[in-house]
Image (cartoon, rainbow, N blue to C red; front, side):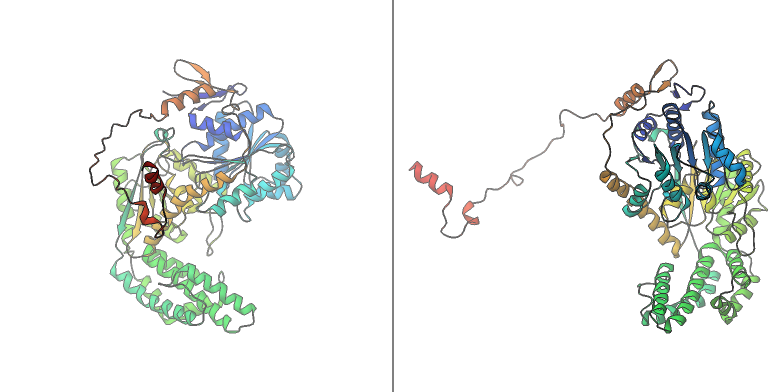
Length: 585
């Protein structure tokens, strides 16, 4: 049965109701809250209902912060469909400061990027004093020096009756990160549900995740061998000098630690640190190049070398020496003559072709970590019948190549949704929050070690109907380590959130007392939101058995053997049973 929830004041807007969402709204109204729900479980719907109640019960206005312009545009469109009695506007860097100042002063609901909020507060264009509610989408960004957490801290300092809702599917894999988010956002409570929660799981579309193990061609392994010997010799030298301390094969994490030690030794006056810095920088570039060859492919590695060889964009002396080395010169000559032979590229072509043959109206998203991989994949898909592919990359300029401006990103996504394109090849810019309802297949070109990015990528499909996720893993490469790392971090995430949740000083709150303004409309009835939630709770309440019907067979061997108490006392010491026997006599 489909249920719709409405608010007594904002009756023109409505949301499809789910009991667990109403529970989250009730708790969010009791104090600033971090909401942790799986992707596609309706975090945004909780935000809509919270906005409705805050605007009804409080003076002031609502600020909704999203990390990217594309997400801001999406949230604005959704808000206009749901809350129709109050005008919502968006403010991003594309709005000139003078126009922004007028919008800040005249609008009741504003969706904005965090950079604009922070900058306008600092420049005196924006005052958050009268802002009643701050909603932070993708709240896991609220750490370090990110503009999102800086904006939230400004809100906490300025707002008279400040109320915060942070929403995310992936707050972080350790307690320190979750604790930082809660501390800096002044979070009083955490509301968390997992995908297997009885109240929630029936609403989530099916999601099939499959790993595909891909062999690395021998030709590529032969190209990598001299590079591995080279990086091995550098790491051995730095181990002797005490800079590289990790065991096992060279890793980027180990090289980063070694670089920090080398730079610290320079500060202490050790002149040998300069050569270590140069050698470690070369090793880092080699590590990157080896991983490109093994996990990305020939074209991506070639483009990586071409980009780093542009000394106008990269004047580093170690990079210049790197490209003058005979081994790199020979490698570039070999790559320039080779066609793409990495099996991952062929696997992507096969998966896309099969998906579109099965359903020509399908949409596919391919995620890759590097821009040069995105470019090589789009090039590899050009000749496939029925494929209309497009790139989705960030706005920054890399290696002399311009990115996509926010308006261009929004345009690409809109055309993808509308069917002008059916394959989106994207970097991390498309990972977060974007609701692309008809994405039936998501391909990870490589596993990522971050549980946040893994959860976000996975959430681009299965939002409204069953979807597939294919993860390509290059056998015997760092892909295998990344896969296990992300799995462990995701398992730790829920434990970390629960640990922090238990320590928060939550205020007392009467259950379901904050959602009196909402009512739920079903097929044949209209009831209060609180009664609807109580009814759903009863429906999903676990049934306890009154009698244990399991039979337990007890044999003589299983019976506990009696031990003489005297064995446990010092020799000659008497026990109570001795006195008992004497009294009997």
